[in-house]
Length: 266
Image 1 (cartoon, rainbow, N blue to C red):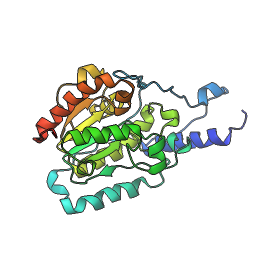
Image 2 (cartoon, rainbow, N blue to C red):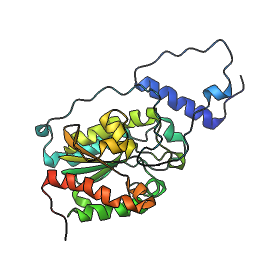
Image 3 (spheres, rainbow, N blue to C red):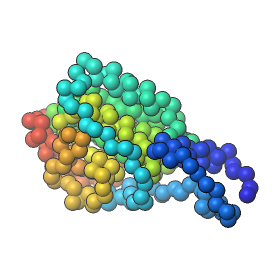
Image 4 (tube, rainbow, N blue to C red):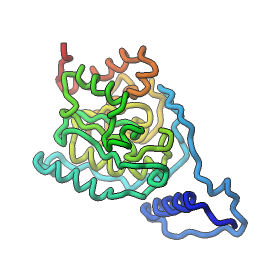
């Protein structure tokens, strides 16, 4: 068998580490030669076509389920340190192939540890990868405007993503990438204990709800996730491509506002 390129060797090493993190330690070499098409990592083209983006549905072993931390477990004053502990646990992460596919910065999250409202998107883009903060590009500017329309400031809420590393060409995260990374997201949610979570786009909704459904079926009603009310709406990047859907997104945000007792800023 020909030697692997350095890039592919790194990707294979990351894949093996991923399986070891899930408790799989025994690997066996097939008797027949394996073609490059078998060992080559698959890539998904960028579509981001809301309301039903092309989300990979191949089965992937999820990480062990994490118990929800009770509200009394972490006092408000201790939440910043608890979040820092999660970030320290992530470290310079190489648990999935995204670490070797052009990532510059791990984008952990941004906002108030005491936030009653949390926004969760799909993954970092180029601006986020450069700055290390979620939603700082054009989609982030629109999200800031959406937050302001709710009568809040960005510093009042907490913002994160399903994956903390930028997928190449902003493609949809692979199941193994998302399932590896959401264990840290769930821990962030359990520390912050938001009253309401807004899932921005179908990818966020899929991994927060544990299954795929068309966005049209998920919008307009309340769901449950990690002890919080979950509301599904369009990703701001989609709203930039189709501004006619902003009115529909505003309806979704009004559901969140009703749960939080907020009034729109006049």
